Length: 288
Image 1: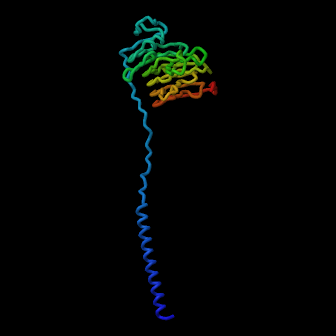
Image 2: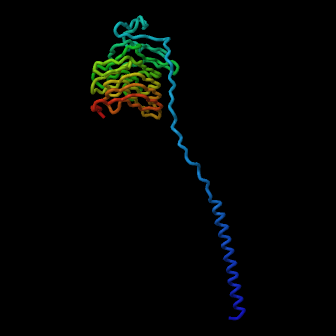
Image 3: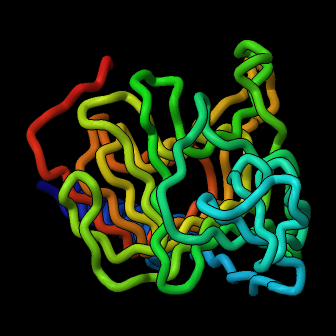
């Protein structure tokens, strides 16, 4: 091979190496540029935000407007004072208005068909209050068979018959003050100031409510009931919601119940705490 061909070959490889080096440099620059433009800052780690806490501030009971019921010595024509009490709980439920309280003397009171119905609402600062007399136990009884018997009822729902509806009563307090332990007629011991007692195996809940808000129930014994409390969540087949909201139910006892649960709440922003629920028997008489 002559010197001219050798020089050509060397020139070819020299130019090829230069060309190769040029493309390697471009590729490296491109990779670096690609890394720069595709670099993504990782998002901050998710934080576990706790659910909102439901807080219900207890409203003190104003006893300046207080009435009394005594099933033994009272009369519904009386003015409802301690010396001249009313006789019936119906008189109290019909009469009480915002800011009023009624104190029930000890004894048994038989609920009417459909239960007692509050005709008026309280307010956030002036609730309607229902209480037992100190150290006297009030026993509210369902004495008749059938699911249409309750102890207290507050129902607003135009999809049901008008005869079954009640006024919308909000801001109701049912507060039982503890008493010394005593035996009920069915042999169950109770120290609650208010007892709501049903019948064995019957489908009668003590308190039922629909679209009635801001109730507080404390210090109650629910004995032999379908459910101690049952509330409904309805929308009346419209875009509006009419559920049963802002209930505060605490420090009660359910002793033997015959539906799916001792208490059932279908609504929003309800605070249910410190309740004792005992099934006691293996009976389940629910129709569902």
